[in-house]
Every structure is written in structure tokens, then in C-alpha cells.
Image (cartoon, rainbow, N blue to C red; front, side, top):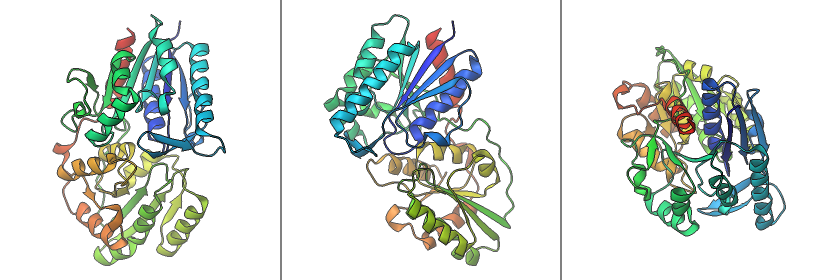
Amino acid sequence: MSLRVAFYSHNGFGLGHLRRNLLLAEGILGQRPNADVLIITGSAGLAQFPLPPAIDVIKLPSVRKQATGRWRPHALDIEMEHLLRLRTSMVLEAIRAYRPHLFVADFLPLGVEGELRPTLEELAARPDARSVIGFRDILDDAETVRRTWELDGSDVAIRELYDLVLVYGEREWFDFTAYGLPSDMPAYTGLLGAPEAVHKSRPRGDVRLLATCGGGADGYPVLASALESMGPLRARLEATISCTALTGPLMTEPDVSRLRGIGKRMGGRVHRFADDMGGKLARCSAVVAMGGYNTVCDALSYHLPAVIVPRSDPSREQQIRGKILADRGLARTVPLADCTAENLAQAIAEALDTPYPVDCLPRLDGVRAATKTLLDLMA
């Protein structure tokens, strides 16, 4: 009998939760080619990801985060309580029909406003099933997470409804017990770096910038300033400057059109999505990005000088990650309010002029480590 695995990601805003689950799904299939994988997600950008034959998907109606613990429908004109009822029943009926041996949730222990509780209780009653909650390296500031988990019951659910807690980070990078977990509970895997990453010497006379903002819903100011920074960079550096901006699938069409206008004026390129993201990372000289988990993992994997413009809300996650990167010398950070072409150009020039601190990198073999931990749990 093949191993049946189900992954859940609420995906209230970007693509990060879905991308993490897909990385782990591919890791499992690499070790267990006869496994079947079902992805249950609310991601509005699902169509951008090519899926291996052994992976199928159930798309939940999308939601959007308003504030910590508060959500609203992303597209449908429907009351949130009715949307939650629909999502809850979809997840539960999918699990009842598919009967996975392994269920892996990302980020929200109980899903959006408790939608996972019936599913987790049903899985807990099955002796042949195991449930795992996986977290990115940083969620938010410690006080906010502790208060939220206490109010919505996530702290109890983590202890009673899950067999394993995975943290896709390392303790020395960020100590996850700050959120109130016992010191022996989180299993750290290292960050989910890009397994195919290559490190090439990049000639100084040809500076290729890659500007990216994850899903792209709030990324316009960063990409616009990155494209505009080509002007002051040309004046500052004796180099040929090029810039490719990736908008992501969630940026509005008017914003994409405005960026294409800036790109045409500055001599940069603007694309919705990159089919060969690894190739673009390998060829670029530096990256300008918001501080999302997956983007940072990519930049670290390819040893890229980075300028990070952290998102300021709805959580402090990216600001905390940006400070860790800056403290280790792995990136320059520019506050969103100060994200101008001149400020980015200065930060990019400084990043390019600084030797890359390889000794300060965190562990980046998280896909391999997490896959092994999940399969060991099932063994």
C-alpha cells in the first residue's frame, strides 16, 4: 500500500505556505516514489506552480488576513461565517475520503478560525494516521503569538492534536520556544534552502539585479524603487546595470502595467513569474526583495548579496527576520517607508562591495532533514 500524504496551507495572502508544502511533497516523493500527495490550499496563485504527476490539489476559497486572528473572504461576496463553514467541510470531507497516513499543516495549528479542528480530532482517533504542524522560522513577535495561541486554543491543540512540531529553521537563528513551547518540542530542520543552488563568481562590470516580492499583492513600491534605482546605480558604479522585476501572480494588473512603464523607461524587465527561478538566481549579482521566508531562503542558498525591504504589517515577522540577516551581515535592510531609488542604490552598492559572510549562514538543508523526519515518523 502506498503512503498517502495530505498537506494543508491556508494561504491567506502570499504563496509562501503553499511553496513550503510543495518543497516537502517533492522531497517525500523523491524518497518514496510510490507515495500519493494531496495538497489542500487556499492559495489564489496555485496555477503558477507546476505539479508532479503524483500530486493533486483541492483549492479552498481564498481568505485574506485583516489582522492577527481576523480574516475576510478574498474574492467571494459571502459572509465569513458561511465561507468558514464551506472551507471546514471541504477539508474534513477530503480527509475522510482520502484517508491520509500523514497530515502536515503549515503555520496555523487550527487553520483559519479553527477550521482544522474537526479534521485533527478525526485524525487523532485513527491509529494509522499521524499529524504534523510545520512552522517557518519566525511567526511574529513573541507576545503576539503567545496571546493569539492562548485565545484561539492553538497552544493546547499543538500539544494534544499533533504528533510532531517541525520548525523550518534553527535554534541559533531564532529560538522558537519564545512562543511558549517546551524546549524539547520543536524539531528544527534548518531552513528550506534551494537544493539545486549553485554559487558562481559574478563579474563586477555586469551587475544584474533581481527584484522580487513573493506573491506580489503589496510589492509594487519595492519593485518600482528597484527599477528606478538603476539610474543612481549607473551613476555610482562603473558597470552595466540590468534589473529584472518579478511581480508575482497576486499583483493587480494596473500595478503591473505601471511597473512595465518604469521598466521600459529605465531599461529593466518586468515579468509576472519566472519559470526558471533557479537560473535567474544563479545569474544575478544581487537581489532586492521583501523579507518573506522563501525569498530569503533562495537568496541565502545562492549566496547573493541582498537588500531586504521588510513588510511592516500585518505582523512583525519580516522585520525580525531582516534584523537577523542584518546582524549577521547577510543583507542590508531598508525600511519600507524609506524605500526610495536613491536609498536602494546605496544599499545595493554597499552589499556588492562587501565580501559575502559564508560563515554566518544558517543551515539550509531543511528539505532533506524535514523529509527524513517525516518519513521516520511514519516508520
